[in-house]
Image (cartoon, rainbow, N blue to C red; front, side, top):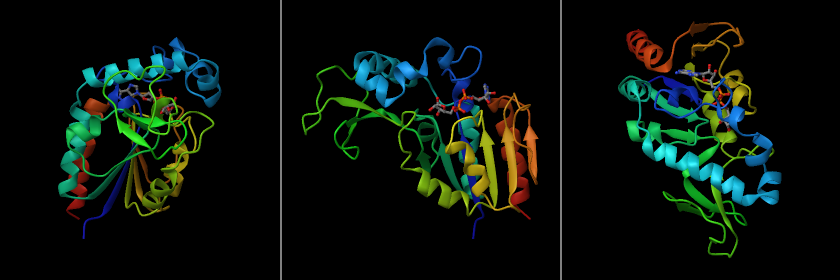
Length: 231
Ligand code: APR
């Protein structure tokens, strides 16, 4: 039986595909106030601005392509039972060819009813004001905003608890509950972290840090993991 490998990814893995991260110096939260575009209060106060923000995110995602890091991770599926838990709303893991992906913070290529969160629609164009779901409520992007529940946390925590190896790539680990997932991984599991800025990252038992950009660090890590899978 293949060992369980759980990979938590954040905006950093898509940075070299041209998608901005949130908290780096040129990040999205330097350009926008998150309270204005990524909370239920913002949606209530100025839904047009919220739609504009996410319409731009959708355009950016459609213009981006998976990079060497997304692609390298796919190779691991031959050797491990891989689950990717991503905080990203892009579809670059899917387009690279990964099989099991949990989107913790939603998916930008879907819209949803603001009345019933299970009513989802494929969405590749702009969501406009006045565009309604079948229940008659305004469509919103299928993303998890600050102060909203994270419904996929439960399956993500369960699978993290079974990890023989837990990998973290390109996330500042500032946003909970996602940032706490590494603590669900068994104490004895091997853990790896790939990020160019590792100074503020957690230190824990069995943690190996690869201080590099995703397109450089991930292919190296993948070869290393393939080597250990043979023992
Ligand atoms: N390769 C790997 N990591 C990188 C790269 C790169 N080329 N460039 C930047 N990084 C790292 C940064 O060092 C940082 O640790 O990616 C991380 C990005 O952190 P954030 O911008 O905070 O993004 P993320 O952790 O994904 O944010 C979590 O916050 O606003 C919300 O919902 C949003 O899902 C998002 C959540």
